[in-house]
Structure formats: structure tokens, C-alpha cells
Length: 576
Image (tube, rainbow, N blue to C red; front, side, top):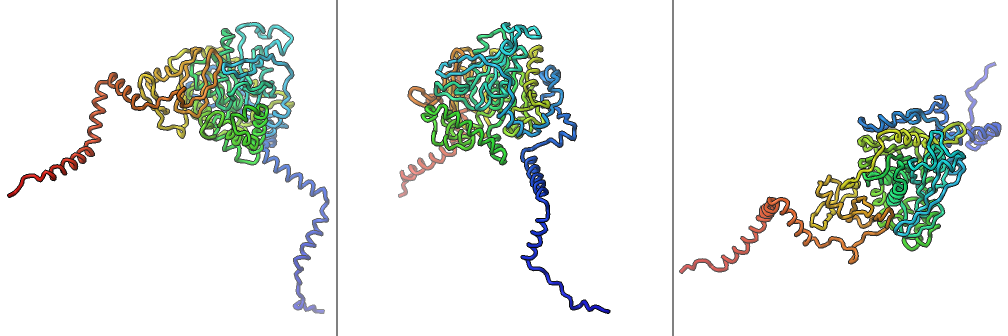
């Protein structure tokens, strides 16, 4: 029997029927399969969003990553100090359950597992009336024994002292600072944390506030501690914004500094690049918001001062660090703009002027301080600087071990300072006639002129100055305690400080009858010409020669027009 199939036609289902069939098929899939798929998608998203590297570490057996060093090829600091540090020359292995820079950073701030102890507080009053809380910790505070295992006694006047500069809105109670203080004191050294003004439970008692480039408090504390303990080797450790302040301070003072060595941990280096970075990705914006909350909370603690000196309404509405800096830091510090503040307070431009042994530790996956801001070439050019970069670590975290009870950078910093202490490369303060020249970024240069009392005029830029210019500029600003500091009078928007007997006085440089600025350019130019003629008798004649040659075409044309008309007006010879 033959079947004629030519008349058979397939009738396509309607679109509604197709969706019904699809829904029926999907309904047949068990619900736990959907749960598994959703969980897998969520885990994949979080794995990439949080930059987790667990599986990569698992494939390498959690062997960790080596420390990469950037230093000058002829650096004695690396050859004699860093190369002998077992921790720095080893590998850093992240705590397995914290295999993410964000997990490490968040865990440090919310938990941190800090050791338990009590500081001994000292309130230090500056000459401008400001109050700085100095929190001390010694070996006897963390141990029942009076003598350290290495023979360092707690009351020894030669016991090394480490001065710590905290990060933004951090004080001595922060988890990472307690880790640092405890381990350093346990090692037999003395530790003093110089809390920023208004932090550590201390009220602001003057119109001076700290910021990312405020070095005067660090300088004051260092000079005070050195004066009270002249026989003790003095070291510095700066963290985050504190590291930026530390490097800037070292660059400003050069060799005239009573510090034997220093460590900068997780420095932001370039604040302008950091400002762009922290708003680039969604995850970074969380940190930006968190920091803004901390800053506004700090301002609310001292509302009377901020209400009087800054834009309080703007501070309350700040949702980012830049907003706070625009409404508070910029105004209090008298900066023209937020970018001006960021440029002038960035530590990267001060790296070439660092004259003491300095170890800089940074994590390449730091979620707050980007690797893009690291001044690789500047660190490589300075023989005193060694830059240690680690692949992972987060911001000030570097948790290690299965339990995550210790911070790698704390042990590395203490080991570096310990090896430096036993070497001949500790810095010894040198009184110099002129300190290292302060640096500015190229974008911040301008046709500024410095006019000194004896009439000398010098352009204020980044060009090298002569010995005579250095001596003249130093005379403009002498500290009472013997420390010299070059100030840039032309930058009237920057908060300038003066040290008096180890204390800091906050003054604002403005043009007024009580604070004259050299505006009499004509008188100053006359003095300059006289000084120039005395120094080089040919210089004045050279100036006259140049003036005649450059102005003669214009003068000649004018004379021709004037006298030519007069000759024509006289009529000349009369013809009869």
C-alpha cells in the first residue's frame, strides 16, 4: 500500500505555543539545579570582582611570590642591608582564606586580630597651641621580663626608638599599628606613635590641621624625641598617608635630619593619580566612600573648628575624598584647588632628595594605592632608596600563615631596621648650609620671582641653583632650633609652618601691611642692578649694549618721523 505524503504539511507552532513548550521544559529541571547555577554565577562574579587568586595559589601549592626589588645598581643599602634580610629575600605567601586584596584590606580594618596591650600616653603641646598625642610602648609593657633575650634592657638610653606616622584617620588603636607597635616592642625597641592632630581621642586645640603633605608635626615629634633621647638611634615608619608624609619630610630636610633609617609602607606616592584611580572602578568607589565617611566623622568630632575655617555644608554632603578635600582640606590649607593640593603634597617628587636609608614596601594589588603612581625611575636613581614590591598583600594587610595572625610587612620592616642598626650605614645627621631643594611638578611651575633682602632676584623653578643663591635663600628662613628650611613665598595658598624650639607654629603667609611681600619691584630691580654690577663689571655694559641693539630700530623710526616732519615744516631753501 503506497502512501502519498505529498499532501502532508508541517504546521509551524505559533510563538505563544513555542514559549509554552519552553516553559514546560524548564519546569521539568529540578530546582536545586537552578540554585547550583545561580551560586556558580555569583561565585564567578565575586571571584573576579574581588580579584581572588585562590586557584592560582592552589596550583602553585601556596608557595607564595618573591619580592621584587627596584634599586640603584651601586646601592650600598641593598648590597649591605636588604640582601641580608631573610624575610625580604624570601617569599610572601598569602593566608589561603584571604586570597584577595579586598578581603585582606577589609578584614584588617574590621577585625585585624591585634594584640592586647596598653600604651603610655604623653600629650605634646606645640608652640601654636596644638596638641599631639604620643603613645609609647616599650619591651616592659609587653613582657614580664626586664631584660630582652638579646640583652637590651628596657631602661637603656641607647635603646633604638621607632617613631610611627599613622595613615589617614588612623590612630594608635588601629589594628595594623597595634601589630607594628607590639612586634617592635617585643623585639626590645621603644615605639612612639605620633597621632595626627584631632585623633587618638584628643581635641584640636589650634587652627592647624593635618593633611597628606603636613610634615611639620612629624618634624616636631622627631626633633623632640631626638632631643630627649640623644643617645638612642632613631628610626621612622610611615604607613599609607603617613608614608607619603614620611617621604616628603625626608626629601625636604635632606641630610639635616636626626633619623638613622626609615620604612615607608603602602605609600600613595602621587595623590593626583590616586584620586583618579579610586574613582575608576566600582570596587574602588566603595573605598572612596568609606574614606569619605571616616573624614566627615573626623570633621564632626571637631565641628566648631571646621564650621569656622571650612565649608561645613559641603563637608556634610561629601561622598568622596575629593569632595572632603575640596570643602575642607583645600580651604584650611589655603590651596588654589584640590589638584594643586594633590600635586604639592605628593611624595613622589621628593624621592630624589631622600638622603637616608629608606625601604619602601608596596603591594601591586593595593586597592587604594595604585601601582601606576609608583615612581620606579626615581627610586632606581637614588642610592639611598630600595623599593620592594610584592604581587599580593592589599593595603597595609599582608596577612600570612593559616590563622592570619601576623602581618608580613611588620616583620620585614623590623628586620630591615635591625640589620641597618648593626651596620655602618645608619644615617648620621649633618648640619648643612642649605637643605635639599623642594621639588614641584612641572605643571605647578610658574614665572615666580624671589627677591631677597640684598636685592638678588632668582626665579622660583626646578632648575639647579648656585651656591650663592642657596645661601641667600636660606637666610630668608632660619629655624630657631638650628634647622634650615627653604620656603616658597610665592605660593601664598600653601600652609607654611615655623619650628620654634622643637615645636611647630602654624602661620599663613599672606600679603598685608603686617606681613609685607616684596612688591616694590623697581626698588628691588635697582638693588639687583647694583649687586650685578658689583659682581661682574661687564654685566651692566652687556645689558646696556643689548638694550641699545634691541630698541634702536624702534627709536630710529620714531626719530625719523619726528625730525623729518620738522625739517619739512621749516620749508627748506626758498626759490625765487
